[in-house]
Length: 434
Image 1 (tube, rainbow, N blue to C red):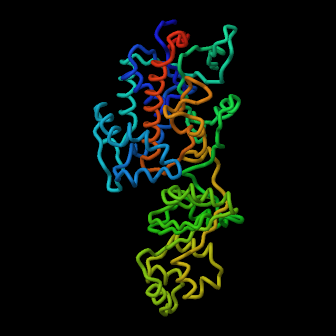
Image 2: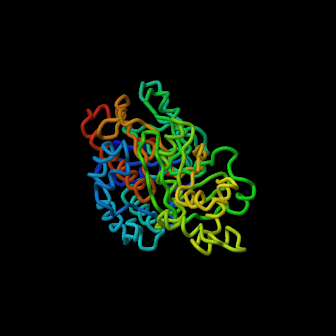
């Protein structure tokens, strides 16, 4: 199928790619929009993330919201100014989906599900003329005899070459490869001379140092949450982190909300020093002096475990952690045991593998991009979403920035096409709908 309309090829049908298609279909009159993805259906990671309740964004004040992007907040800020939490909220309502703000400030669809939102969104995109091509795995560019540049795709019908006037890459990071984000694009861009920071685990679990958990502790407590707990941690720069919440014991270490919130600093500290040590306050709200007094009370014939449960409500996995991480002498000494309850050291030695992580850090360096998210050395090629070099904790921040960068890349491609010479935009997508 050939068309005289300028064509934008979007590679990657996750939130960023679909939002780029949305921006182009709404604001790019006269453009053909084609979306390609290696998977059989769109937005698989988006749907998986929404199974436990689709966290769209967060309602906290702008300054706090922006701080979640750490060293990349200045790069993310312009994207959120153009399409931030409020714009995202209005866009969701435009799809006929109501939202609510949870007690933590997180914003969810009224029914908590991703599928109805995605269904309404895809319907509107198709009605707007967006074309979808599934089972198309991008494998780089080729240089045809006429000197142009064509995209190469592996498909079930063999390799295909596709011409496009602008390209938006929204291929995701390197986590959850089974859902499409396998990071294979990093080598393709590196071959083109684009600066790409190595992909690393983010919002991930960690392995306990040494030989890890004992067989007894692992078999009894893996999968159990530790709550409430306050975690303190001094990173390699000397900054002290302190958060309250919960985490989960795994077969090899720890994961969960509190751990994810600290994962970037934990990962970087391990990279710098070889390990990172958390201090766990297993009795939040108790002063050490009072806690020591309670632990030191006579316990008669009761075991120390029964004594801790009776006096402090310390039981189960918390008692297990104390036994696992303390020596027998420490556990038997009331003063040392009380101090450990307030600051139990847990040393971590490694992140869990990238494919297990919720998201990834690293990717295309912002320094390689202009303000429209176009690769400076590759005119007409834009990047969006998690394949950019940024990271954020869970809580709606990841998804918000993916949407915002997709929106920016879509408008950037539109503007670039409008400003180049008409002769340089000749060409079209030469494929059929998937």
